[in-house]
Each structure stands twice: as structure tokens, then as C-alpha cells.
Image (cartoon, rainbow, N blue to C red; front, side, top):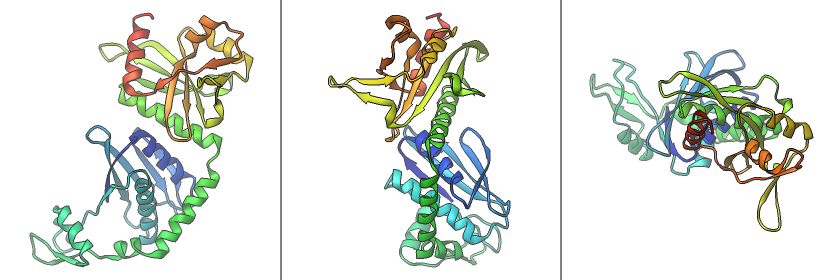
Length: 306
């Protein structure tokens, strides 16, 4: 099954993976840049992969290992379906059918969608001319009230489980995705308590690791920014040693903040502190969107020695 959707792809994908992990039905197994494998309670594998299409559009392919119970498949698919539909009301779901007699794929997906919508339960195979069931057990359970109720319960489990730590994981996943999109190297920090959560090492014009980098301090949540009377946003430095540690680094430290609405911005706090003084207790946050384009601008600046 595939889903075509549009929106903030990295945010949609990262939150989907985290929320699936925090349900009690599925356990995160392996993660890649734009793919994630999960395990069922019995250890069987299922997963999803995101592919970027045109600007702002993406496709998620859902796959299951042989032998996964139909109910489990449907719950996994339905959870993904509801998550994507909440982000994009025009999300397009495509079932991929194969003739059970000769193995020929059904390739006219638009025709299949129209026939299912019209209540047609079978289609003729273009090769062997046998009937291919469209309204199979997966579709029947997918449309059932029981499936919808199960997914609502799963979402409530995930919502309760998501705390500050998991929101930071979403932001960490976004940093991985943006660095990967820009062709750079992201590494999470093994111990972020000192005020640095990861680093991005830049590649030179030949595609080789340059040794030059920026450091990231990741913060997720609305509580990190306060608005002054003049409308400016303020980030309070709660630990004085952070400012000292940031300014002691050889390369810039970037403060990256994600709001509850999903907007992610970043700002060069090393540059700010060097101008304002290391003893300041708050930062006027004038961050720009944290994107592949802004990362490339920072790369050019750092590689040029700026």
C-alpha cells in the first residue's frame, strides 16, 4: 500500500515514526534516513519508507513480512492512514493488488479506486482473465468501526507516552533528515547535558568530509521561547555554563528550536554571545527556518572561514 501526500515531509515522517514507536502494538526495530522497520508483539517485521516526489510532496510505502496477521497489518496501515490524513486531507491511498492465479500485478490504480468507491468487489486480471478480489479481508477490516476504534486507542496511548524526551527525538530525526537532504553528515552527541546535542560536519566541494562543522543545541517545545512586549522572542539561558561552553567551541553553536506547531528555526548563538558578552542570561532569538538551503548557506560560510 502507498500513500501520496504533501506538507512538511520531514515533520510528518518523523512524528509518524515516533508515534508508532510509542504505541504498545509496535516496537521500533531499525531506522534509516527515510525508512523505519517495526516489530509486532510476536517479533514479525513491518515498516514504511518515504520517497520525496515534487517539492512539498512525498510518498510513503507500507510493507509487511509474510505471515503478519491481517488484524495487525490493518492496524498498522490504518494508524499511518489517520496520521497522514490529519496532516493532509487530500492524502491519496493506493492498494497494490496481484492476481492470485497468475501473479500479474494490477497496475491501473485509478480504476481500482473508482471501482472500490462504487462498491465493485472484483476486477478482471488483464493476463489470465480470472477475477481478482478488491474487497478482500484487509479492505473489509480497514473500513470497520473496530479498526477505527483500535487506532484511536493506539493514538491515545502514543499521545500519553510522548513527553519532552520524545519531542527531542522528533527534532533529532529532523536534524538527521535535513543534514541528509543537504548531503552533509549529522552525528548525535553521546552526552547532551553539557549543552550540545549533535554536530553537522560539512563536506568539501569534492564530497569529502572537511573536518569543519557546526554544533547543535536542540530544544523542542513552546516553553523555551517567551515573547517580550515589543514582540521579540527570548530564549533564557538556564545554565550559565552553557554560554561558556558554547563560546569555547572552535566552530559555531546553533540553537535549534521546534515549536508545538512543527516550525523549526535555528540561530548562531556563538556569534550572538561574542557580540553581547558571555555573561548574558537570555538570547533574543531571531532564528531562520532550519532547512537544507539554510544549512548550505552555513556550510559555505564555515568553509570560507566565516
